[in-house]
Length: 280
Image (cartoon, rainbow, N blue to C red; front, side, top):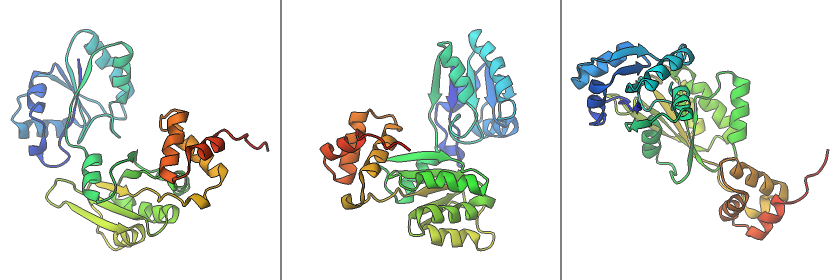
């Protein structure tokens, strides 16, 4: 069995009660950083008898093949990353996909999540949200990605490194507007936890003022306010339907969702979604 084990994002006491027994009973532990794993095991009071191997971005493809041999042989493989849930902006996706493809059992030990923790304390809407991981490092690509998200109504969650936080917040202010509400969460659950809330322009100024941004950073940004019905052209409605369908909804459900969010009748949204596309 493959077990994806969530690990604490800061405070060791947040570890699931199932984590220590799973590590103690594992045949193989695949760890993003084996030294950090050893420290975690010591903090949990676990005597590790399993074979411990590294599993990180640089060797993930090769190591997946090796771990699959263990799974086929009936061994229990526990996958842990440095913090949080494996495969969420961390190694793990490849081996999960490979195990699922061969119908081998995969399960998880839930644990703390920086995504959900930041979302919960942000003070921003949580009824609909999306996780976008780390923004692109290059300014042009970053601006393009933020441009595609500018009209998304969902609250957005991003990871970012401390030294790029100021530039990312400035780019967000340019793409989403300086008054868009956001929260910068750093060192969640740790001794120096801090959550800064406010408009993107103010947060960008705060982040760029001296050496204030340190530690693990999670940025939460509120979604776009729905446009007034009179401001939406037929093409705008069609684009909203397509965007919503891309989230996994059927055309019928996407039309209903857009109608609900915009206050425009389903009949009008349906007509816009099925209008002939102009040829160029």
